[in-house]
Amino acid sequence: MSSATRGDQERNEKKMTRRDGTGATGVDPQQLWLSTGRPGRGRKPTFSREAITAAAVALADAEGLEAVTMRRVASEVGAGVMSLYSYAPDKETLLELMVDHVSGELPVTDPLTGDWRTDLKAIGHLQRALMLRHPWLPAALSTRRTLGPNTLAFLERALAALRPTRLDGTTKLEIFSQLTGFVTGHVGHEIAQSAAADQPDRAAAEARYLATVAADGHHPELAEVLSAPGRSLTPDATFTRFLDRLIDGLDASG
Image (cartoon, rainbow, N blue to C red; front, side):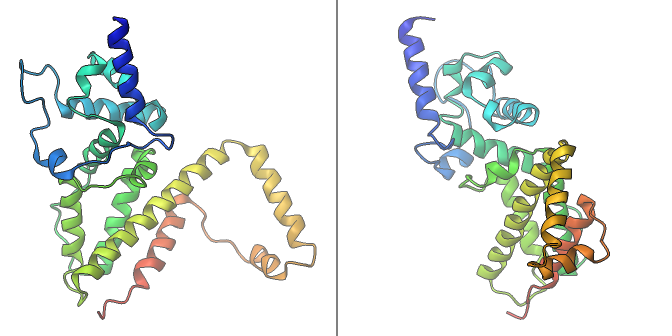
């Protein structure tokens, strides 16, 4: 690689990611989702946006979002780094593509029950399962800005689930946003807790600390809570309880 080409590549890499890891220029959703997704001139492209996105997703699944750079993705697909910028000009765009790509795993054609609470809970469980399959997804969702075709299809399903209610359109969108935000935050915490569980000494130390604090006489409410019979603390059971509280507490009267 010539020094000039290497310099161009390095400048593009710097443009691709800001200090906080997101793109610097923003994404035009119409250009991103309604264009062909491939270079418009020159010879027939060797790669497709779909293949590049799939490679980025596989990389994130295996090593986390930090591993996803244009250089690594190019290496995975056997392409030159510069050629990838025609498909995804920055990391922000690539993340948008990745989020919508995995959103295609969400079922959108199964019949709804007609009970909007039951259907919303099913949607929440589907979202959680997707995020657990792709542990980088909660972090990516916190920075995404657009709705791609797969995401829109799932949104359409959520709005259809809410049709039996008397809620207006804005409230329906807010409920879906609230649900997605809850699932995203819960799964992010769940993943962190799972990582902490791999450190038994740390977990035991935290348990001893809480027991000591509860017995000091200054935290009677905490002491009462810790002495109460425990519920199932499996991740599935905990998520279901939290989700039920959220959905059952919604007011659909409009």
